[in-house]
Length: 114
Length: 114
Image (tube, each protein chain N blue to C red):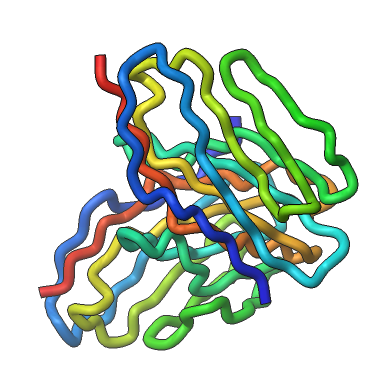
């Protein structure tokens, strides 16, 4: 089974801290994604990557950056955490669309910024 | 731009009732892919189905069935004889490109009471 592992299930950080959310997948997927989930808004795409060292902005990239130095790892960085970044963060991976039958998601990281 | 609308934010049914979750989408692309995901209380999104825009056949999988109608831009999901284990948040999603960024609807929370 493909697995997407997010390093933390729950995180509490202070305003202004630099925060790293780590995501690792074990099936050699080209594409990786970071989504943010908020009630009533569904999942919104922050950033995605379709290759090592490649990244593309999603719908809500402001306040975030990403890093993909190795194919299996995709990190989300909050440069200076703010309370409006309190949310559930979901990482996902997939093959390119013509070979994909769905994303594989991690279990999520619930981040609270105080 | 793409958009997915799930007008029902919350549905409550009694076990064994049938329930339909609505999904309406907007896209200018002629080739696209539609998905349904289930998010149980554990938090991890689980892939249920993918449909291609050029395949309008309805699909049935056990108690689950999907009705795809391009004429009304809808991709509705029906659970027959609902069970308590069906209680979850269900997301409809759309993608159109090789990078396969998914656009999600806001989700429908389904509560099945015994």
